[in-house]
Image (cartoon, rainbow, N blue to C red):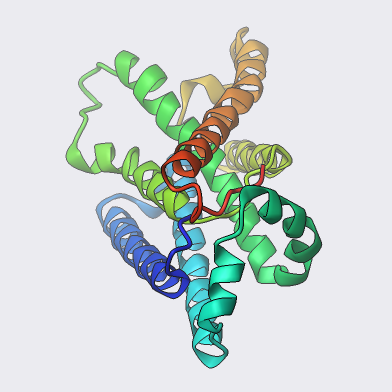
Length: 253
């Protein structure tokens, strides 16, 4: 995140998150109106869509709170320069001592949702565009603008937010991503045991000899999906640190 004007950048980030949340919420309501509620929420992408919407809602509130606190106690011009124009070495040395004091419960909760959403959007979009779509050529399926947006807009919004924020992206967040996927699988098993005979994804079906391999492959694919997003965050840090060596605050991962 660039730190030339922290108050204006924070306000811009807050506005961006608010717009993303409104658009995602509108799209979610439109999908609920268009499709059956139960059938829709058995799809993993809808879970991910809702999770990203929660992240932007929580991020908007936290950003608004940060802007409000900044207006109540603004930094002096000299203090602002000293705080935000540190060298990377100074920033690294001071981060460990101050980050735990600045982060509260809701900030940590937002960071958990952010890391979970990052892996989830990569998983759902890659599975849809690279695995499901090439083989879903029957007459019952047709790629529409709504379906395409459902499997692309959430990732685009989250990537744009990642360009603007300075949240940590650690490999420990992979744990939350795996737990999120496990909750979805358990939810599907529960529905199938109670009332449903239809699986939203063919690789979730248990009554096939390939089921163990499918589930093992799904478990393994979490690592590259999360790793791709981590590489994007690292690439952002290296690129921006070269383009803006004195005004860029590094992410820590």
